[in-house]
Image (cartoon, rainbow, N blue to C red):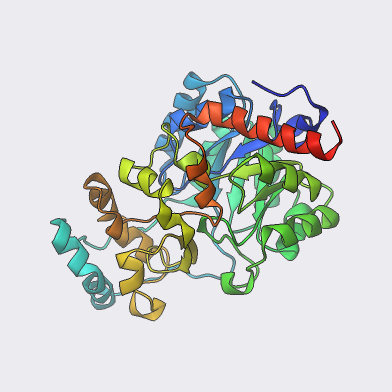
Length: 368
């Protein structure tokens, strides 16, 4: 149910052909067709994270989303960070990295992994499959898509979205031809998607970042980070955003692919404290501190990305099935404590709730 108030029509809703300026954050590893479709069917832009997906799986996923919704949706991919070389460990180095994590594998009864031929699918093949799927939008993190990719997407009537953690990155994305920029503040849960400077040097808060990005680029700006209710929508729009991206709040809904134990944590008191860590993936990410994070505080003691993410990804699913939140990735943003303030667990109705809340705030501020 969309509001009839004028504020719901923005440059972003016109770009994506959605009814309301609400975007689902793409979750690498925990996206679901059901959640993507629910947000899109409610008038927002549902998104699906394709991290680690082979081309055939990308095609199948897009087909499943299209079967679940006729509304616009976005697909998301990770780009290689400029200048970051993929690790090429020899057998001894790989074994040393495995040994750091051995206690978790043994505790869960998971077999120790063998070194693979590749850590990640070929990104060019991923992009080709995503463009062939023809979503309404194709979003990227960790870099600027090439001119050829942007041109191919546009030729297939796909909007291109880039993600920035600094004004400098937002400008680079706009100059690269993207149609919209996600300005993601350091409050956001999950990975810090910085690509021009180290993530530790790119920790700008959402309230500071959004208006600066809005002033620096001519394309629509999507605010992300530290937003978990309609008040955040109203604030982001006031700061110059054209839409708002929600992550943790949707991750806690019934349609989420997060396991029940993870959803329970997101609705509990532990979200009051989040930390930035490289322990679980090798890249800086915000999550709720647990045993793995506490026991692996030194990045030099474990593998870099993407090896660390690949390795922990071999035992995290088993931990999730057992409800062992001490051995999982518990990505969460700094506004996650607000999630417990609502009993709404359906993603579609949550979109409606955010619209009503924002409408109330904006109406009050407007003197209605």
